[in-house]
Length: 185
Image 1 (cartoon, rainbow, N blue to C red):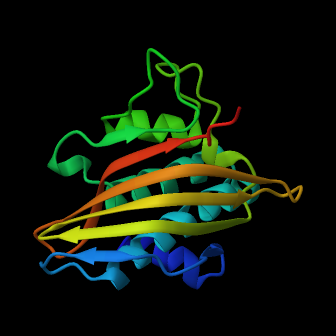
Image 2: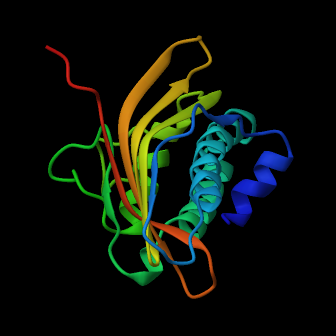
């Protein structure tokens, strides 16, 4: 699962944690709860790894790592991914292509001038707290929050929905990624 991010985690670059067990609806199929949790942890580790790589090696290395992570974690090879990043705005609200996802994560793309590189913000730790997990056949979905700690000790929490598809190689691929800031009055 996400071979690039597992290698980064093994080097101590990633620091994500799953906060709690969530209710799981499992209607059959080959996907396990453990695979879903591992995919989420790999995503968190990848975000921290991109941020660390940017700080230590610069934008070219961070872009190369982000491209590898997107290729291994997301299902763009299967078709458009339903990706709505937290801080994306029209006319680029939705990132159905790998180029759009890359621009969101690392910026520096003239076709996406509003993108400053979400993964370049000095992220130190990612905490995932699922409200629920749904598994059926070759599809899994999660709903919950993701809290991300930056280098100054500030935490940003977003509402997150992920959808995964089990591909022909037995790897979970993100095919739905919706993120938004929590509603406030």
